[in-house]
Image (cartoon, rainbow, N blue to C red; front, top):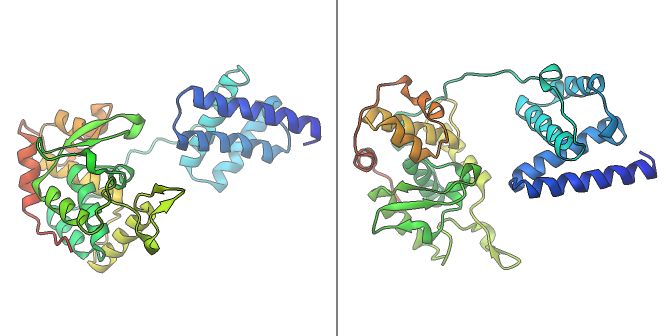
Length: 299
């Protein structure tokens, strides 16, 4: 890009970032959507405000060859946002790129496998974090961000703050999970975080306490899977799937599971009914029954 065109792009790019903030997008979305516009401009070496459909097809054809479909969807959505909110134009995206719809059933662990896996996790901090994620059906980010003030032991509830789509929710707190969280907290006594980052003894960056590193949690789970010989395709998010499946098996109603997981649509939750038909039952009783069957070592 020459100087004038570069100035034009920088102006449009700033408007793009500002529009994303004004639309209330998360930091993760802002980062992905802004990166998609930069990548488009770098690909053609010019300001993207005059790129046509044929050129866009060429761009996405190369992107499909070099990136995952999830990255392609982020770029498509980011560029669509740019066209709509910055350039005030519309695109017919079906004519340009349409990622395939995959209908897959995730691998899940049996209750016995879950207990064996948890006890194989080497470091107690990761073991307790992973069990908290499993026993409350949390996403990884929700688990590592848990704070002392989120735990309501009087009501046996946990306040999950700013989950997906920035939604708060309350989830039942199993008695076993509360005991493990208390024992773990006594090892560091951080006044705010349940899972502070203790790597190298450094907890602070510019005076802010960091949460446990998500990559470390993922690596701990991967190592434990290898050590205990579980060959299923299991990730930290699989613990959430396993939790929901175990509730279905225990007879908890699908609507209650939907609320526990924070799903906006019950159709998302319905994937867990491939095992058994749910029936009405108190979810706290069922959760505690499952967790009490596990013997997790806190140290």
